[in-house]
Amino acid sequence: MRPLPAVLAAALAATSLLPASALAEPDRSGKSTAATSGKATFYELRSGGGNCSYPSPPAGGLYVALSRREYRAAGACGGYLTVTGPRGSVQVKVVDQCPECPAGHIDLSRKAFARVAAPGRGMVGVTYRPAANPKLSRPLSFRVKEGSSQWWLALLVIDHGNPLASVEVKTAGGAWRKLARADYNYWVAESGAGQGPFSVRVTDTRGHRVTANHVRLTPGAVQRTTTKMY
Image (cartoon, rainbow, N blue to C red; front, side, top):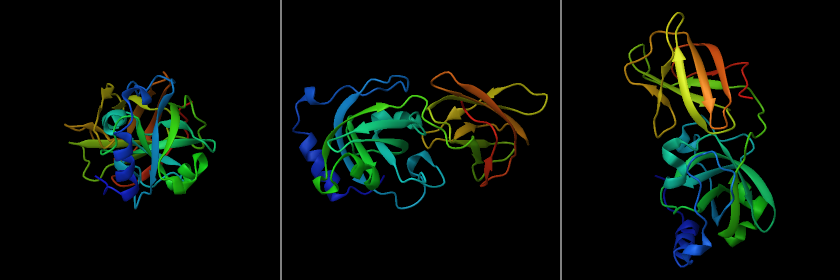
């Protein structure tokens, strides 16, 4: 859990004074594009890519942490939100969880917050909605988690655009095996999936499905492919 910054502590206190009608019910399915009215504060990742386990923050520095409820045990990871505030709109990637934030309260990167409001305000009213099929700048990448072997596999999918619905793997001549998503955003085969290399079938919440081949059992390395999600 990140330490609670002073600006967020003040924001939470202010949010608790809002009437229940001030915050719309947030989407928990990963499929809706309906807007949520809520509040935004800002923070900065100190290292890595947050609870979603990405190796680094997005190159443009535009990212967001969601409440535990909206994070959906990593179900929101890698998706994008369009956030609108007094100054304008920005598209941000979901990379982190804000356990201390109530539903309807998002924690933006400092750079993203500056796109929607003056940073000196600390907290601001915003609307935000899932961005369907955001533009992809690169094909899918995969990272096999340290400690993985033929007997236990954890696989991270990177640059997929929409939130993911399922990830499956198979080796040559084998059957597809569905992996289970962990709350740190790796997809896990508790009893392993063999020595690889693997074909990996990825399905997102918008119905796109692609297969990437020749993913190796090489823990700790980001493996880039030529397969785009859409």
